[in-house]
Image (tube, rainbow over all chains, first blue to last red; front, side, top):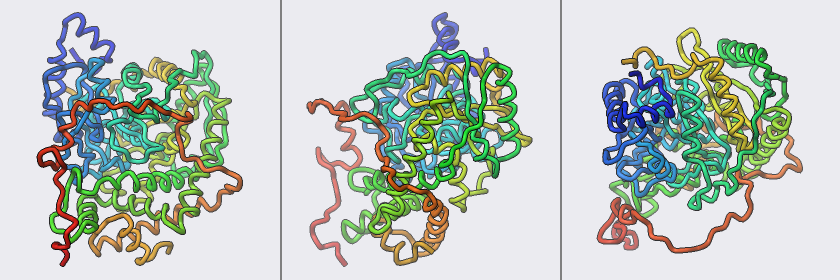
Length: 466
Length: 98
């Protein structure tokens, strides 16, 4: 019985027919984690509460789950015991899921490679010398290698889609306001959204339906959760080719062309679109997201919880030492950058300006999506890169997010799906950005992709079989 | 150069971050590199464009202000607690000032 190739729906049938028990299912996954986790470092901690079992899933280590530590992969929260359940975790428990453990991540979700973790870099299961992508690298690698059925992460600028692309799985970020963020450690509040990584479309859709909805504890969730889309027979997809003429790996572009060729035959209409502001997305994003982060991360001061510096002279000194010693290099870089863009004399030139550019990007995407169902781009300009390759070059690291940040800037749903491998055997991902609150049609289309190319889904790397 | 060492010191002070002197050089180098890249924003004409800050489009998301019991309140105190209070270091006295 190869459980790894089954969808949740199929597993539920096995459970119903008593072919397997929930405990056996979870034990199977725990055994796999024990056997393989040291190879890729996907989990920071495991759930010790084994009183109830269910469909085995995992969450990123910035989701609060009672009975586990929530570290955000940071020294400053190394010993922080979760004080309550995030709404997503509560819903998962209620809907028959079991949370196996907490996935590795870039510290405070800041990074594109999962190298910025206090608990060590996470690795790509397709080749362990390569990064899994970030910041939800632990989630993507655990799903790809069959250490978890589905993983929940956060996507602020591509943190679910990018690792999904590098690890060859689906990574989905719904519209802003779909899923509650109560109990999830905030990074940049006007961008953060819960995202899901899965090996097949059915798992993605069914788990999404289990966790979405208005939450009175998070008033950024929408009261109206209707699907603003209906079934379609003919899809129209816009491709902004001129934005990826330069700097994109040839095999990634070939993959996109193959996709276009195959689905043209299936009556999908492709059309060229122009997106004039996209080239500024990455800069606008990093101004705004670091600004918001500098404010959100001010709560980590060593007073009520978390790491506290030992020798200090006064209160200010306690704060500064605690934070200087507790945060890693990238987090410090972003807090400083964020404080700078918000500071007196620079606010207008950076933060205010970027928020206007954000508005232009958002308006342009909304307008294009009136005539197209989706916008198609590569998820990332390249496939995964080697561990250590970009770690000392923040600008080239930030540029990995060039195609993903647009969806967060404009609050739109987006998904990365696997579409082949490059010569090195590393997965290639393509991205679809959809209309606001039109997730349903995105799932319909993903099902069509899965029907035509079932070979791309439920694939486990050779080294993790058995 | 957009930020010099003086600006970096000031920002570190504002962000309550004390870092090693040798790390400040790297930080300053990285910041300038990033901010240089961000210069491209100056090429965008944003005249008459409004700022966009709020990602949810709903207005007045209000709820009733009602007291509810928090199920795991004790957990909050487990991190730095003494009895039912947060246990924090003494900060009002000047004893610690050197």
